Image (cartoon, rainbow, N blue to C red; front, top):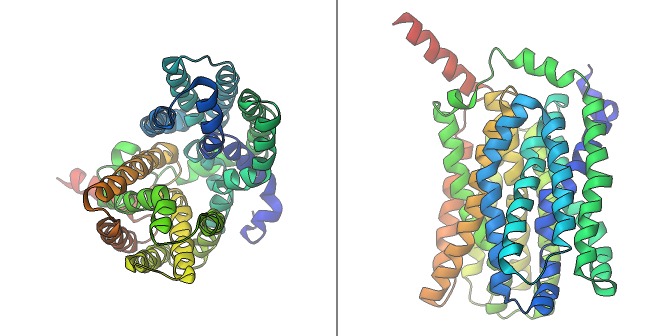
Length: 414
């Protein structure tokens, strides 16, 4: 295989995997905001009650991902992802028939999240990681940008559908996307991969680590700490940036325009950082991205920042947020091999989900206590710096596998 022509030779794998990821978990989360007001109007639910359903779903996915990773390593992405997409589509159809029972709504969201946790990058990414080597970072970045790209195309139609028909039609549309975009995409990717996944996994098997072996290495815990340190501030910044900018005196129109810039930056971060990971020393790339986010975050300590300063803040934090997924998938494959990639990647994803959730709570609580976001901004800058230093200090390629091998030699010698 000529790695110089990976995209030309293996685009069906990347296209299919991107379609599968795009129509699953992240799309449902991104689209959730379009259902808030219609549900509140239909059933007289408060926005807080509706938002609690999103909290249930987020926690469910966070806890489920490591288990889905283990299942993927054992049965393969096609089996786990296909079942997940089918079940997710069914749950979307059931949500379209939900009644005014808030308990039923929460229960359906729990089951929906359980289903779409089988269609996260942790499950689908092995197809891409096994196919691409030279441009693995960029390929993973493109795959993870799928939900944002699909939402950019689909959002106007979804909003129009909800307005003209109803929110029930919106849930049906999400289920149809899973069936007619995600599932065919997954099957196309798996077929295009063929036996490559098994061959490459076998090739790397001698050096690949199981999850149990990975957790006994210093590299694994360095990655876990880096993930927590960086996602806590990013979760808070992402959840509260509109309120933060409004407090700084920006009009709602400017906040909305800057919000579009932020979403664009997330996509750029995923693809652009993926390219940088392939082209330069990956730990230094991760450090550089998060260091830029530190500087941009500190700009928000200004009581009256300029519109340019606000734009820099959102671009840098957006790029950092987009890069987070790249870091986890790239370093999981690089440091621990592909044999148990999904299980290991799943634990990083679980920490990411928890970090984003608790980060939002941290920002809101600090604002309630001190009357401004200044303390949260300082803590965020510190967390991003710690995360950057931890990512930047990661060892060379496969060093974690070397740790395990050296440990095994020491035990045998003893």
